Length: 158
Image 1 (tube, rainbow, N blue to C red):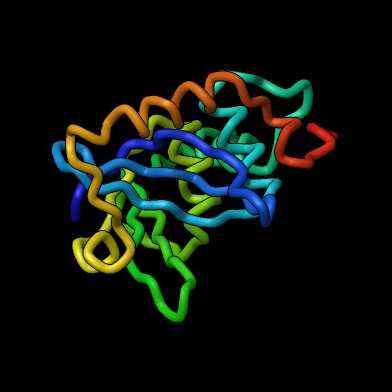
Image 2 (tube, rainbow, N blue to C red):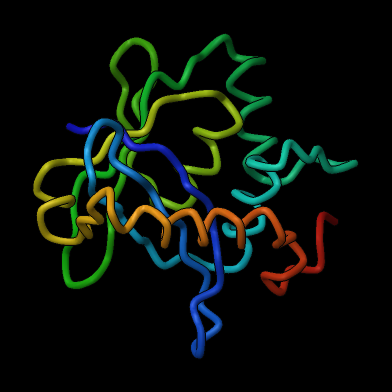
């Protein structure tokens, strides 16, 4: 497993499909995962440190874990089958629960939990961006600084 950082979310044009972009820590591969608008909003909120008046689903999940004295120890992006990514939530005590990567990433950002990607997933879907192309990634980061959760079509927290 290779540790991944969340670069951010953006909307892929012309399909208007949100993507979360992960970067291999200590490597040059990036992992784009297409996600839904609700999850894009949840990830963007967490990255921007926004706290809704009422908890979103991922905030609620985090609060329940804290209330039960459980800790999410890691998130693993484990598989890619027929274009669908799979993830696991790993809890203290070794319990593992299958999850969508978008939900797992949103929860990891809220709990400060490390995210890992399997070598197989990174080999199949990772995109190597050498250092000389890092300016393209920087442009993406600048875009992320300008985007707001509302840009993903969500109506905001209810």
